[in-house]
Length: 373
Image (cartoon, rainbow, N blue to C red; front, side, top):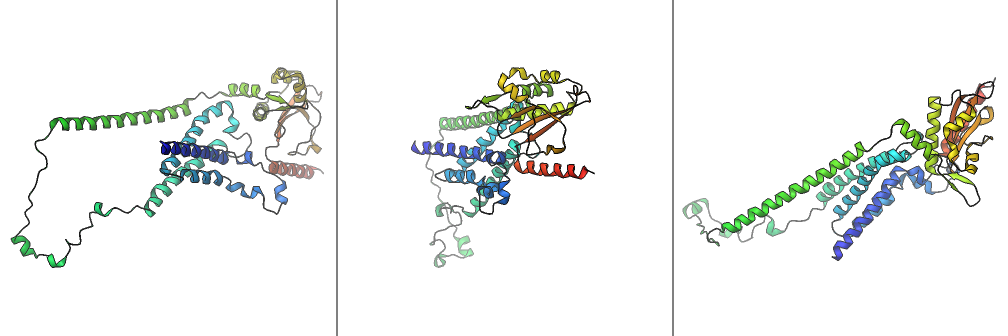
């Protein structure tokens, strides 16, 4: 009983470590966001270990799974449960929070698909390392009584050896001695029934495993995926999610910023605001559903400095802004000569990657400077 509880505890801890491994492989930039300051630091920092931080949960799994019997069963079960959880969560996240599955911006980390891909490599690598290489290097010696090549030294004694002629002239006569009488047909029938039950139980188990695998595959491919318009309505609802800080300021949630960027990209790509007035565009965004104080913050048109762009040579108006304190998405607009009709809508982001923000800002400044006469 104690050994069973210990094994279950090791399995639980190994599964937790596998889930941490999946998160580490999927969202490294979320755990340790890129920083500009690291470029100027010569001492050893935690960022130097960022490419190897996935080894921490992997070593934790190794220590826990090896602290008892059935270490391979515990290891592969923990990995399998974590991978199964990722596969089951994939379609749900893709439908309701795609920023955890798909990149909102091209320079984000790999998200869940990349993490599951690395987990598959680790899983098959573990098969080769644990079940093939280690099993070959540390093969348990076979007991002498079970080894057909082992013989009693007296049998191989040369002094007792016989020639071929002696053996042919006086062959050994084995006298068989039967230990049983007539066959017990009832016992044989019960044995065949037991074998049939075991075979039937194995077949039923295989059917359950196949049905479970088919269910997971059906869940992954048949889970309802929103259309483009359904996804747009979902994002328009999510982009207004916010929280109020103790000092009275309002901040969007992380999900809201990602959703707002997708809405802004849709507006810019499909020229949704082309020819609209400010009032019509505001009505299209449906920001009236947000609290009044937060709505004023969302529609604030004053100038703002973004670390990802140099606005020195820009003449555009900030129209809609969503930020969570780290990430920010801004929709800029340009108008016609009358200043009443929108002609162009542009989306700008910042805060996802400080290194990329700095590079884009310097690139934009260089391009703007080179275009001057």
